[in-house]
Length: 127
Image (cartoon, rainbow, N blue to C red):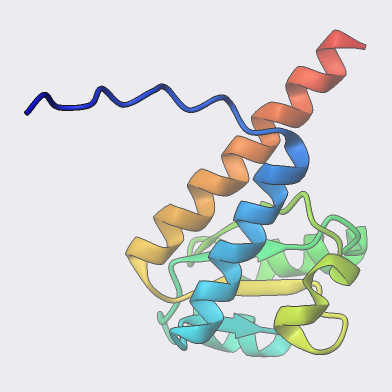
């Protein structure tokens, strides 16, 4: 028997990358490792229970600056390329702030977020 060679996977499109990021957050929620909402995320950060904070693309500037101030030195806050509306299936209501409490799931979410960020940058450069 001959082993089949794996074909290289084509690079995902931005919609595919956003869907993968959404799936990563969905997995966090199903695993019970996702904290949702401003107050809950800040509380969890102060208690040392979170690895990273993420905020929706349409989170207000004042919310993001206040969040960064209150969690400085506790957890990094990263922007998502997804709006609150895009995350409704996970949160059931508009939520701008999310936090992941598991290191492995955080790596998955951050990898998918970075992939989206790179594709967005690539699109902006090509325009």
